[in-house]
Length: 417
Ligand code: GLA
Image (cartoon, rainbow, N blue to C red; front, side, top):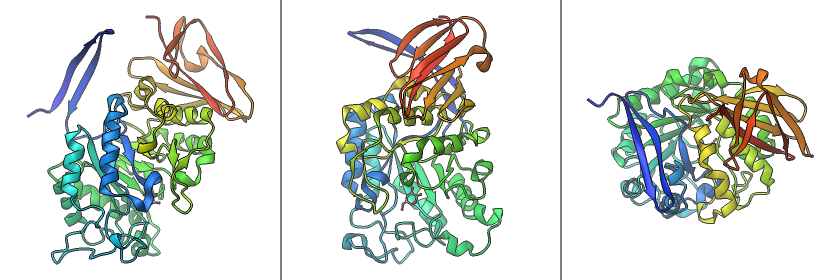
């Protein structure tokens, strides 16, 4: 009965003044009309994750202000189930009950209680499994229990599912056909669609079979375009340039997922280490977040929420940068020019303006410029620095900036106000 588009206007008043903003609610069959935004435990806690840590993450998503700028999903990754064997005896136990229902391990005593807790904060909850017999971490997968598990996730109250190939290769065997790659994902897509609950569906199979070409056809809302970014964190620019190559497949409800935002305190992917403060240069962190925003990538932070510092929060929570990520047009940025060190990525926004990232991968600061003819625009424009949240002035035919080493200058170019 509520299908349709509803324009609303949000007004806010406080001692500092008033502001307003249009907000459109769209009700229909399509999920994830803008990229999913939230947190996932993997790169912070690996196989150490517990119910308590999930609740704590939800608390901090609200208290830190992340929820105010849009962060919404609190997602459990691998290791919440029981495993046939594991160093932590609390994660070893019966895999399923006599009816075949999956049994969470002792660190997750009350899944419904956990999602209730997350929902009570106005947030959403995500879960993870694999179509194989075992997940990548060696925990129980969903093979031959697909519908039962999906119903269970829905009954528990989850709103998001990451479906990770892992050991499914053993079941697919030598069959490397497109159909074989699609089979488990198509099956789960159908099941999720039949449920009386909206569950956003995230494929994780590392880009096999050019998943960006068919992820939408199996009813997924996003798909990982490559392997684990934790192993490639020193190659953020390459990963992004590759991901942006699939830009034509990105649209509202169908997103390319180049994996999580790993800044702040993160564990080393090799050996699933305890979290440490990232060594990524500050300027590269700005570039990382800018790229994910320009590419309309799901913005899922995967670092230790209990150790968020002011700098990391500033990177994660700049509302003008997040607006670029969440822009309803859903365009993935286009690289319009590139040399050895420098490149420019542009993204058309729904208000007619353009978000532009001037990037410099080099070891020294460098000038990067953009001419209006390259943007196919004409006449005087306002240029606003999005990270500084500051208008830089009116420019008539080009814009040039000095871009720090391994960094970015991210601007929005709009008609005169
Ligand atoms: C794979 C995925 C990761 C993570 C781990 C969990 O490596 O790509 O994102 O989910 O499995 O074991």
